[in-house]
Picture 1 (cartoon, rainbow, N blue to C red):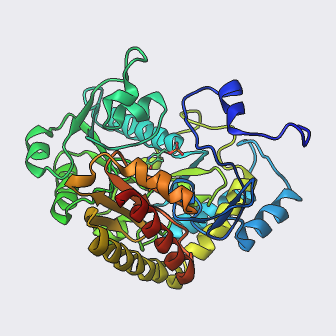
Picture 2 (cartoon, protein in one colour; picture 1 turned 120 degrees about the horizontal axis):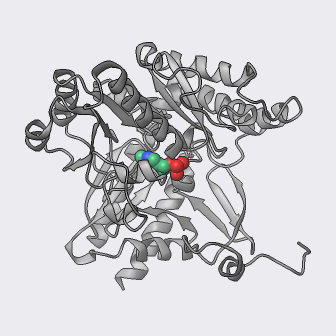
Length: 404
Ligand SMILES: *Cc1c(COP(=O)(O)O)cnc(C)c1O
């Protein structure tokens, strides 16, 4: 591509499958929590991709890890013992309940592995009847056909022919519905320990507890999809650690690579036994570049100072959003945990989350939405206080322009 052939939004319509509808602006450079577009306009980044860039853009530790590994070895097949993958797996297992790791390249793939594992375990241990997967409405687990079918929005999985079977969707936070429905046929429950895409919906502590107890009662396994909540996002390394409910299987991706594609499924030694040689695999899973970057990310994120810093930043966000709300009366509530926050629009502002996103963009601020009525914030976990203040000032200007 020569300089004259500058890439613009229009080229997207020419050459891309239209399953996305990107914005006009073209970001070309990022540093920390700031991003610049082709025209040199600066943005404060409260989105971090979608909860991916947990150390901001081009964090020096990540750049170093990538540079160093890129001069050693880029790729190894799974026939080889892989140094960066094993180093990362050791660190991940040291940080949580799990003993074993399977590496994938994305959240959906990590979830796909989790779902195959629980089905295989139940088949091996309890026979062919125990196949039911229970998941929750508004849940999101990725876009492969199995994971999107387990996700709680039929609109995403309809229209592709016959779906993977024996998947039940129940309302999130409804202990009664779950108690009533669950049986010894239930193979596993898959849930997010704080629903992200579905609108930043936290579980009640009682619900989380009940899920665990019902799984134990019915010999069912519990999968926590921590693709969005994992890696420090909620102020614990994994969100389950703040809930006091431990899953049997956990998936992680997004912030794990901080911007480099990698995902992982974590589980216990007992369950892992059932994924024998040949049962599952991935060509790129455990890629040395991805694992080297993820190790650098995990080293920074798992520091107690970083995790404590997430909660300090949450407080700044909540304070700032309250102040904006006191002036413009736009939010019904601010919910979520750590730096996975959602500002739910009140009655008068219903359906206008995307308007806020667009207006924020004009003011030089990147935010996200979660559905039509929630403005979502998933910034870098190490964003500076000044950048939070400046970003909130820009958000206020955006809301002021809409309120006029
Ligand atoms: C983003 C997300 C996924 C899908 O991850 P991909 O990397 O896009 O495949 C799965 N589960 C949750 C909770 C997510 O937020």
